[in-house]
Length: 262
Image (cartoon, rainbow, N blue to C red; front, side):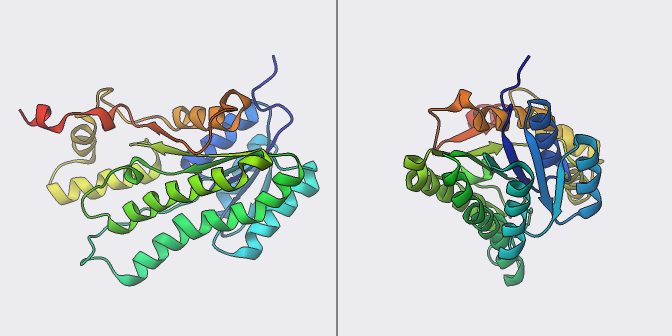
């Protein structure tokens, strides 16, 4: 049985761990040729060997690193059909609490890094007749969380940037959409539960239980559930979907906080 992504070449940033690695595995299982890039070389190599893909260590905020990742994809497969801009960082702090350097770094990675990989990839995608760009955002791009000013700002900006891609390159056959996960069970979220538990004086397990309690589905997503959404957006099944923000948050966006409080 053929896969949704048979014959496609997909470049995935931040592909060595967490959601990025799950997307890489899902795409490979769906028939795509996978090219991974990211800053964690050892993890990239592990996923690459598992999937018989290509790993190109690099930093998406560095123009030359992005150009090299795209060139390696073209050299290996003669085309580039899909870009998943997944690399990103989490940061904390309110406007008056966070350091200026942390603000700059968060926007540099979460926004400028996405711009750089897209700018490197789009000419090749246009030459090949189009393709799909999936930027990995967050529900923090649609609302706000306490004490995460830089992160929230970066994810709002990412949605706006992706909408601009959809408008500017739709006529060239390129679709661009943002995937907005809520809580996902990854090493990053595990660390956040440890931090939350320390802050409120409970175990990480209790912090997790309190975090997911308001969600209609009552749990975090597994990384492959988010990867399945990315696969849809990258595939021809989403052929008339562009400029959209697909929310996968277990129902968090529809919760009536007043009803919960009552």
